[in-house]
Length: 147
Image 1 (spheres, one colour):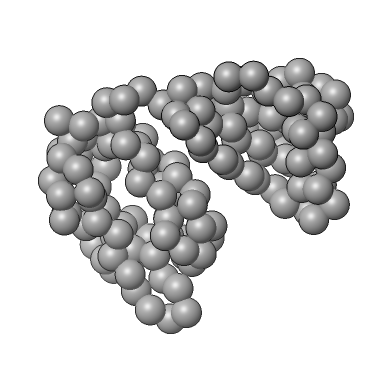
Image 2 (spheres, helix red, strand yellow):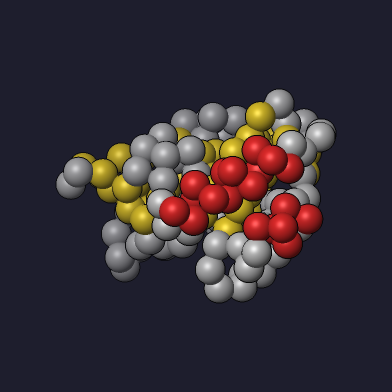
């Protein structure tokens, strides 16, 4: 993948002006993630620190999503819950084997509880969202390694 530095710098400028803390985009198996603010642990995702636009542009690292994994993304903005109730165990953990139609989490949106289900059979390899925290439309919630 070739990164257009001018477009990236313009994107960083808009994200800073709009005070967007986190942005993620995936296209044709290439994923770019921009995180502004405090330092965070690096994952296999692309990571950009917003200390300076030039430094951020140089820190771009694009990763390709392997064909044997599927990212489960949020279908809307809401609050992410890992369990059906505060005192209940989580629907899934890293290492859990899932099948299509199995509940993975709940996203509360406009006072409605929406169960998010697995679309493929496989194993949960990463959980990106934090329990009780807001999620954005298209934000990656889980990574599933296909069976």
